[in-house]
Length: 127
Length: 284
Image 1 (tube, rainbow over the protein chains, first blue to last red):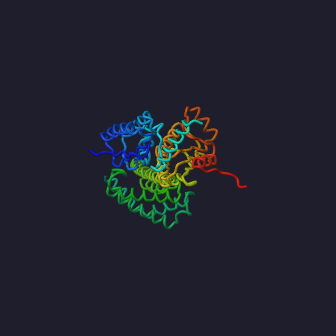
Image 2: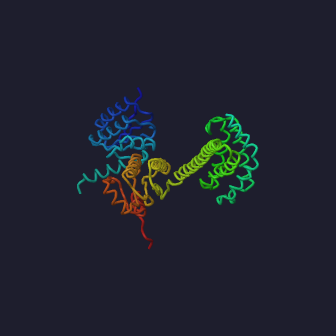
Image 3: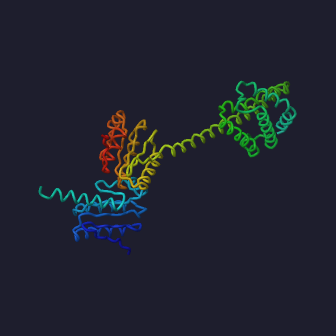
C-alpha cells in the first residue's frame, strides 16, 4: 500500500500528500503521524495538501482530526497549499477547520511555526 | 371543408384590396414606427406573411395555428417579433402587425356575405380566433426574445461585477457592488480564491460598500467565502459595512465572529498592510 512520507525538519514534521487520498490512507496517516509526534517530540506539524485535488467529507474530517490530535500532543498544525476547489468543498461540507492554522505554501507555513516556537520560548524564558 | 375552400378563394381574389387596406391600416394606426422600419420593408414583410398565411390556410382546413401546416407562418412571425423586439418596438406595436389585418378582411367578409348572416358570423368567428391566436403568438415570442436579452445581460453583469484587484504585494481586494445571490457569491468566491493563489496573497479584503442589503443568506455567503479563504491560508477582512447594515445584521442574529471587520476600505487596507509588516506614515 502507498505510504505518505513523514519528514523530520528540525523540531517540525513535514507531511506532503502527493496523491489523492483514500480513506484507508488517511487513517494510516493519522496513526503514523501521532506516533511520530510522540517519538520525535515534534513541536509543529506541516501538512502540505497542494497536490490534493479532491476531498470528501471523510478526508476533510480526518484532516481536522489530525490537527486536533496533534494539538493535544503539543504540536501546532499548519495546513498549507489548499486548492481553491478543495477550500470551497470543505466549506460547503461544513468543515471550516476552526482552530487549525493555514498558510498558502510551505515557506509561509514554516514561518508561522517558527514564530509560534519563538513566542513559546519567549514566554517560558525568565525575564 | 367546402366553406374553408370558399373563404380561401375569396381571400385570394380580394388579395390586392386586402393588402392595400392592411397597409393603410398599419400606416395610419398612429403607432407605425417609421423611424424603425421603412414602408418598403413593411410591405415586403406583409407580402411574405400573406403568402405563407394563404398557403397554410390551403393546406390545413380546420386545425388552427399549431398544426404542421402553419409552421412557416409561425417561424415567420417569430422571426418578425424577434427582430422587432431588438429594434425597440413595443409589444402592442408588434402585435399590431397581425391585428390590423382584421379590419380589412372583416369588412370584405361582411360585404360578401350580407345575405347569409349565420355564414357571415361563422366566417368572422373563425378568422377572428385564428388572427387572435397569431397575434398572441407574436406577443409571446416578443416577450421570449426580450427575456433572452435580459438573461444575457445578467450573465454579462455577472462577469463584469466581480473584479479582484491587487492592492499591494500579498493583498487583494474585491469591491462588491449590487445584490449578492448564490450564483454571484459562487463566482466571487472562485475568483477571489484563484487570485489568492495567483498573487500568493496573505490578506484578502471583501468590500461590501456597494451591497445595498445584507440578509441572513448573504451573510452566510460572506462567511463561507471568508472561511474558504482562511482554509487556503489567507486572512479575510470584510470592510465597508454601513451602519444600517450593521444594525440589521445584529437584529437578524448574524454575527461575524472570528472575522475581522473594518468600517471602511481605507481602514482595511491599513490593517492589511500592518499584517504584512508595513506601516503607513506621513512624510516629514
